[in-house]
Length: 97
Image (cartoon, rainbow, N blue to C red; front, side, top):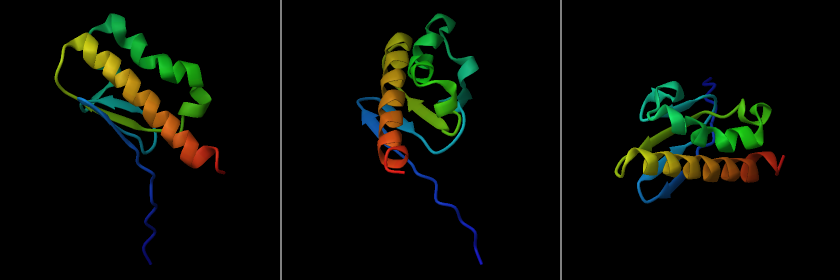
């Protein structure tokens, strides 16, 4: 018998940003969050996670693909997409439980 576990997935699309959230860490264009440039704006990406707290974020993986625009515009687009995906995840799976 197969033991396939269905993982929830959320897609948030806004212009040039796509966020996929199933379970655990943050990757942007296939790279870990530590390799994001410019380093000064890396905390902008962490704002939604810091607002929620590490305990609520620990069970969620986020993979983000972004293209187009400049570095700063991409950082803000990623931040907004992460926020929308986390809100959708918590509305669907955490609030109903």
